[in-house]
Length: 173
Image 1: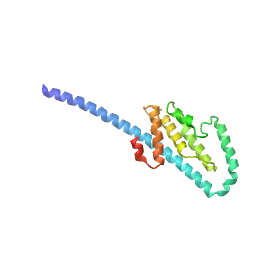
Image 2: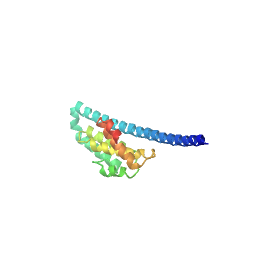
Image 3: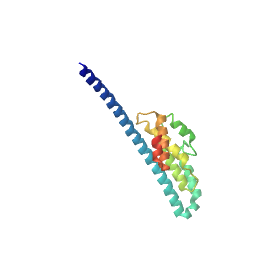
Image 4: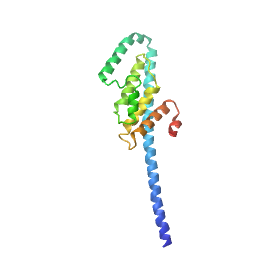
């Protein structure tokens, strides 16, 4: 009878261990997917900025077209109508931690910032990266069963780690 109890207890322990391993593996794979997508978005953004800068440097006569590029950018922002992607976008970044955002937010910020830099205007890297990462995390929370704010934080830190060439620091977050 004693052997049965020990065996029965081992079966229960094995079930708990399997559940723990399953959950750990599930979250590892989901975290890896978020990291991969965030890193890909960061890489795409940096490639777009680099290409925009290369085009501007390779063709110095494009400086003549800056007023036209500015008008085109203003028209594009007017066509978009929400002005969410103009300036820093702090309100959108804050919203990404509490609301589910559209897939357009990270994509449009990436495109508008790249077009702005290609046109010869000043455009930053850090705040657009915060915007892209946190909004991407918010978008991914619609598909991954995790809190919206958590994925916005993970998206932000992953994007920043990918662009600053410090992927190990993202693992710590």
